[in-house]
Length: 553
Image 1: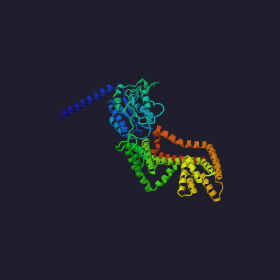
Image 2: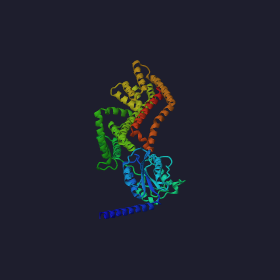
Image 3: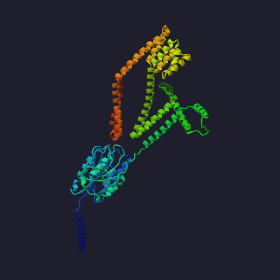
Image 4: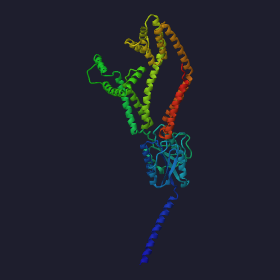
């Protein structure tokens, strides 16, 4: 009985095995005449993608993978400056999807695309000569230049664009020349679902002679992706707007500063046309805000004891603005520069310190330039001023009367400086000491010699008008020699300006046109070292050339 049961079980197993074997043979026979089909996914993993866009790229690649028919094998190649074959063609979707979502970002360009296309062809050779193979490229073409990449396989493209060096046209030409399609990120699944209807085109073996990049694009590309601001960048934009508003408010409050000035302006305004007793205007509200900012800056300057020094420099520059108002404007300029550099550089830790330092240096440079120009103008006017003084002395005027004529008939800045000296003399100071103070303020050796001549004439007597005329002749000879030397050294000064400005202008242009290329200078230790070294060399070279072309007369 047991033997009979065992025999029946064996017969059943044999029948089941025969059925399974027969089904397998039938499936093999039915698929023997169909070529294998495969697609290689080329995923761009360079670091130029913003975080949200990188996630969108991975989602688009997974959507394309899931939309493929079940019999289509899929492989994965990642690329940036180089390329790596991660998975050879397989029907298993899970490992390919896992590799896509876990791909690590590295590199700063997409220049490894050509090698990735060649690797895709090599990875699919084992499928046989009759296999239907395609590639799909997901990239932003970061820093991809030159002619369009070529491929022996039909290539579909899914593109993004974030910066000026992202060239979508090269990827579109790749699709057009190989008979591929182009799609936006949202339509990536449509490319996968359309795989059975897409067959290799004759254009894949013969590139089109002419034609626009969009000739083969069956799915329209979306517009360029909008720039995505991070939290520091949004904060920088907000600081930029606030600083601009404060500048406007301070500028509107500088003309009428202080409670007394505003009260006087209000009293005078009562007799003007269209006066109505109404609520404070927007300008008055702005003046209050500006007054609060100026008051805070004034207390800060007094706490550090810097208000007096800054007031003297502003007076030397000929600026009537208060030290506290100048400090507020300088702070606003620094914040504006910090926000702008943060937006351009894309990093908070580089833009803010660079902007604050640049703003501080810009305000100091403004004062120094204005002081230098005012002193230079005083030196140019001094011979004519002394000529007027000598003529007045020869006409019988006293020295004080001659200086008063200069104040009334002269031009700025000499008239203002001599008016200061004359005012000091009228309240009891010695006139020679007051004029010596003018020479110190204007840093004028010629004025010091003139004061010395006045002191000597007072001590030993003599014709002061004749002494001043001899001094004027010497000044004019020295001025002629100074201008002659300046014209002879013009070529050297122009060369120095060009050599100093060239690296700055070239660096700025490269930062604008190829940001990924310049990003290495402030994202890597070696780049930061090179950047600091270059800055030091430019500064040293500038001072060296200045010493070479500066001739004392």
